[in-house]
Image (tube, rainbow, N blue to C red; front, side):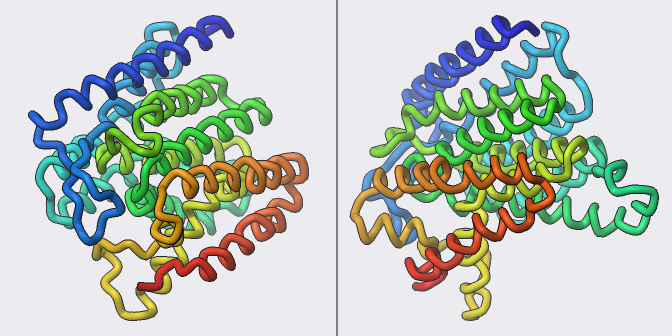
Length: 338
């Protein structure tokens, strides 16, 4: 695809997601897609959910368009289509009528295993003795994908935060993939996801008129993790870069989970103990918290990710510089505390 074709694809993806979200907003009540306020939620009015369907459908349309134009149709697309599609379907059903956690977990595990089987591991970059690291890498990749799926679900608790994070992450990762002269089709796919999510974000920006629901959060977590897995084939430093880019979500969700488990809470129980939720209650608004996350992403994490890309030998140092202050801040704010 030429540059002009890519620009046309991305602009069409944004407009399509924008329009599709509006359509879903109009049909949400008929489809029984209303999120009722409860003691565990951060909203006070019944709000339509399931808007993530617009992200999923629009992104798949972008993939189909790329395929018809002679673009990628390989293993990454297969993993996203079958694995991501299964997660989206289960998430949509769960948005309408709550499913047992075991059913969701079975689908998540199957999708993660499928992605690893289709895309593989960055073994070729590890040298001739890579055989010793195959199973640890498989386990690490599997756990990372499962955690990413649930992480976005955990962090999708206030208006705009998950959509903003996915837009930033996918767009920035696409830029780094282009910087490393990675697969151009992968770059276009990541940008397509960013623009699809951006179209939804227009309606999800605080005060949100619609929520993405599990259909969107689970799909975004899986898709972004799959992108990282594929990027790591060409450049292992991509793992460090993406860990920095997703630092806000990774740290808040991880610190909250660890502190809750240490206190004896059931990790799967719904709650409002993340740092961003504490801030939203303290500030009595969602918008300043979402904007703060965006500011941290652009003003703190993105420059450190750039530094890791330019100086890959010091990537671990830049990861520590990026994440340790966030760990301290989330503890101070109260992540994991009742």
